[in-house]
Length: 256
Length: 256
Image 1: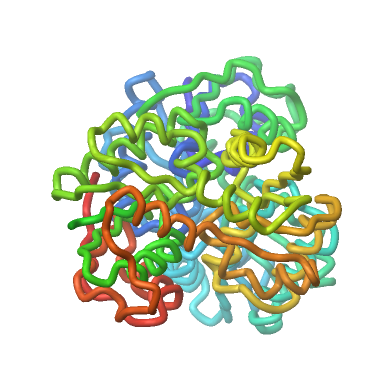
Image 2: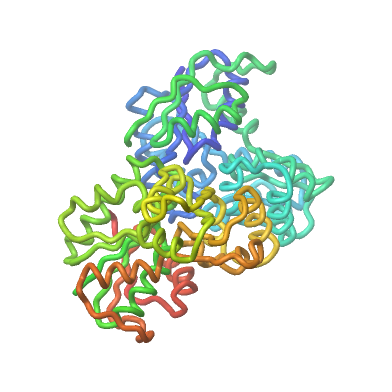
């Protein structure tokens, strides 16, 4: 089976990594739209237009299932992608489920587009209408991760400022695939809070959607993963390798 | 005369503002490619492709002169834009001239693409081969400005970290149109240093290129300025109004 995973850039590699570990026998194609990154400050119509192009390209390459690793696309354009004709798994439902399991009050962190869509709040309330949810857009987190400043004074100061507005929470839901890389400073800024990201829950949903038998033990990273980017292959290899924990091979530059 | 000014987003409004004050009788069309912003992390080939589309669109709308307000485009794609058939003024030469006039050692701050291109260092050395130049990419400055965090602890911490790497300078050249909005924290982080931005020098170059008679007194903001954006018109009006110091009218969303 060939599973297509796409994102606005390299943050979705955190989702790919979880999928590879759960489904070490399958083929993966990862597509990062690095030319147009970031999506989180774009309008829903523009995000949908780009997301459909990415999905169509992956379908042309023969994927059987699309995983929308990008929270912004999942929040504002999942329906448009779902009309392309293959099964689609997004990150919002999975993330909401993991956060509710962890317990409220829940703080949701995401890009401007994701938070403004209200998608996470709706998904959480659909699971538990009595849970308290506070949402906060954190537009500086993506550039911090892209800069490689994931530890130290700068990200800590930024995290404290964003979380300072949020109100007290028991669970922090990381509603952007870049944010797991800031887990350390987020935990410092919110000691004792449970930090949840959607990657594992997305892998559960993919196993359910495909009927494949997942592995509970971490397998070898998939032998068969191809990477497509729309710009900056060298930059993708450098930063993406940090996320995946190993050098990236099979990186192809495409125009889509 | 109709002068087209384009940028990856809204930072180029600092250049437009200087042009309007110098040439209050002329018509301006400003085009911000907000859908694809930021340019500073993209490859030169991709920047050139987008810049040519923007230039072509402005020429279709009848501009007599193109001002490339974006430092990244000026650094890596000015030649491609210059082939479109109307006179083109970029920001690199103007900025270098202003910095050399202020005196060395010069610190150049810009996006990754601008700094990696070496365009500012070359332009400065061409004017004075004996001047010391230190360049530093500051990728977090644009998102800070876009977030509206231009004062306080976060931008100060970021500025101190970037400038801490730079070495001692007499002049700081702001090689990105967003950076003038951080002038206050940059001056705090580098007390006694002269901070130079290219906007005034670009206006000098436009006056020279057109043969128009510039005004030394600040005129009324041009009565006749149209704004084009590729995404997020409401966001552009809100943030752009802060830069221009008045509400923006005539903002049109285009697909280019």
